[in-house]
Length: 438
Image 1: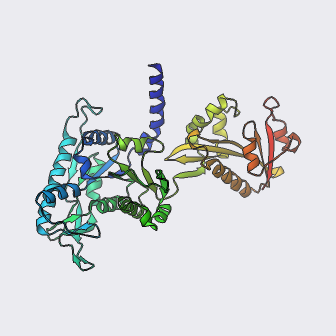
Image 2 (image 1 turned 90 degrees about the vertical axis):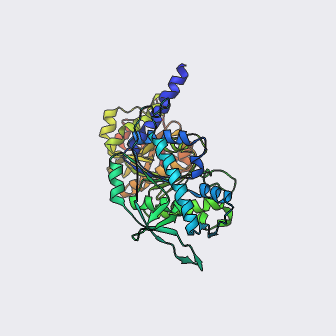
């Protein structure tokens, strides 16, 4: 029991940064309609209510494809697709309206229930839906008349934001309305992408029946930039069709200003929570820029740096630093962040008279060893040193000498240190002294 309590504390501490980071952010979530009819739907509703309680701004879009195909199959009707987009004639448009209306009611009623005997018991969730999407006909493409299949003309951004500001969940079916009063069937994944771009959402999340992009060895690709995703799109035969289309939407969303797009398997229990509150998630994330951020440390980073270095100080690997000392020296630090959580740090202390600098406190969280991040941190230190007109770097280390030697450092002794550093050398630690000319 004591071990379980410790695990709970560690888990809660690990999720707390994400709770802070996600608060007030806008997420557009697209859910395939087969999930709505699955036994995971109630769990998904509970998770949405939880996110809403954390003041995350939620826009929920959903598809009708599975429901329509089931209905058309039952009616023995002919389904016509062109380039994987349904041709919507008047008869099918009526079926689309029925399916969208039923699914909308199912979602609204599920979000309206008291959620008794659940983690979100007594939570009150307000859902807003309406004619937020203006549409236009797709027209004739490649000689095919799409009839009542449309594309997004515009989005009522101000109205949606007003609802989100009131902490309401905005629910948008795959239907758009024209200025002439006609309804058009919209491809839901494209609509979700357009919504995310127009709202400048922080995240666009696709919940479907796929877990994400896999490499040539069938291993899940957990993260890639939009530019890297474009490289995959150049080899369509190597990617599953469903993944390919989602990856296209992800790239277009990122190019339109959306920071991150997530591809998730909605059949996994708690898929949303696992993706949003675990450091590396469970699906594929496409980011507009590099996921890891390197920058100058600030006072607000002190707690994160201490959390990172304290275990190593306790083991005697690093020299202990008090919070006060760290505050005074914070300008000497750089940090590496993932999802606004510090996963690495390093320091640089310049001795201008000798044109030398000490590289120190280079730490990468244990979950991210062996991925080249230590080398990235060091490279930034070296660039910073060059800008400070330093010609020689040195390190004092008790455990990482071999790693620094691989970076081109050579062994030296205390006589090679700047005079001020010689006086501070701790002979009890007996650190190896390594130098590198830059």
